[in-house]
Image 1 (cartoon, rainbow, N blue to C red):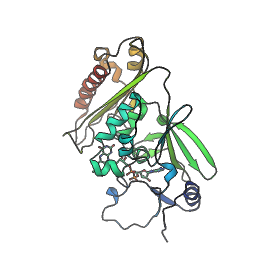
Image 2: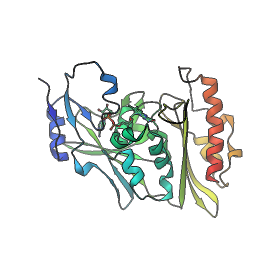
Image 3: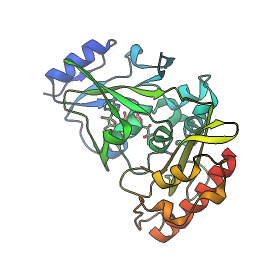
Image 4: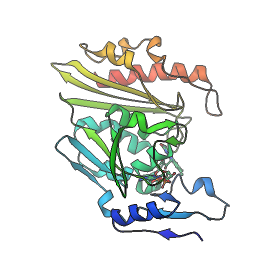
Length: 273
Ligand SMILES: Cc1cc2nc3c(=O)[nH]c(=O)nc-3n(C[C@H](O)[C@H](O)[C@H](O)COP(=O)(O)OP(=O)(O)OC[C@H]3O[C@@H](n4cnc5c(N)ncnc54)[C@H](O)[C@@H]3O)c2cc1C
């Protein structure tokens, strides 16, 4: 028989997860649309009442974003300029209802190639903290998402938090999304970058592109080209996009995606200049 559990404490959630084969539910904005018209037969662990999983706090090494932190929470939390890319992503995920219910962890665990949160959090060098009743482990976001709809979560684990490290130099970031219309749209291309600057020159850079490969990818050659320079769109070369493997689908063809990614990256770096 299926069960529905909505615990107030993380410990109780982890015990249930260890005991029962269940689907994890947060805001439900990815979970429910793929089940329309189907009977709910699975057991559900609903994390939405776990207060300790919600909110953004500062830690010694950076910031901790609790798993059930919503996009609206991101927008309403005072954060340094480093987080501009995540705030901008938050503003562009769905509409107000989706931003109020949808969570950061849900966006990552759903592992859509077009998830807007993934490039933004890659640019922030994020890791994920995975919890089970026997302990916790931390994985870089790049290792957590293994393919479309595939993550490294074990059946007894939940994603408890997203961890963002404090940069070594003053940092800023930006995010741009291209869709077929301005709002409520699945990305055709999405780009995000964070740069750490000393005297105007880039000391560290992280640039990521989503919706152009099975999993959003960082662009190491472009990141290397930025080092020591002021951020500028003129530094972007077509060969920097070689980690991408865009496909043709109903939203755009591969050639268009490649061209759009190049232009978006140029605009992104101009905005960071
Ligand atoms: C109309 C509409 C518009 C949308 N627009 C966008 C958009 O513009 N950009 C975009 O990126 N997405 C968009 N989405 C998708 C979705 O809203 C986001 O991905 C959202 O962040 C998902 O969060 P959630 O809490 O609702 O996830 P849920 O639906 O609750 O969960 C999603 C998946 O993650 C798993 N999960 C959730 N939390 C955890 C956890 N803590 N531990 C382990 N597993 C977990 C669930 O089991 C499920 O498989 C849209 C969806 C809709 C319906």
